Image (tube, rainbow, N blue to C red; front, side, top):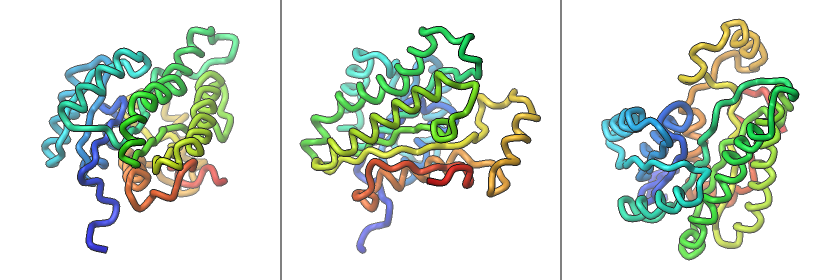
Length: 254
């Protein structure tokens, strides 16, 4: 083998919602593996600039692109900008997410359910539809959908989020069959609870209770999701599609 394993040199990766948390760590891992990185944000330019500075300080070629990834027109504009700045998109990590409150079903309304579906079903669809012509022509593409252990565990009271993640999982499984003849893979990463910025104010009792159920007896790290994405994006994983990698210390096995 004449080249480094898992090298993404020459590839361009888009990570949606990549200014904080798992998305930011994943963007950095893909960049360290050699990919050019398109950092996506919806609202906070300041946070996006911070993420960009961190990536560039690590020697990563990266640019920031603003877009609401549930909006078709915004996605079209973002892809045009990425293609002009970094080149065609080869790797897409669908990571963007709305708030995820736990509520009894009686407290949800359909607008909240729709928001979940927009992020986890509509957005991956729009991203795929925009990028597939180029990927098919190049006979290479990687879709990596960040799902969640909650779908496999049926976590409650979390029905809207769990249902949307189920839809995302079903979409990914169907798409893997449809796109396999073109050399395009569709896989999923299902993290457990990995504390990031948005978990800073979560009750300590909840954290302790969750940690007690992790067989590896420690918290996961954001970059452990990122390195899983690097593997799935690599040439070495070209015969792996339709699969889910659980990054949760052994809480789910299937």
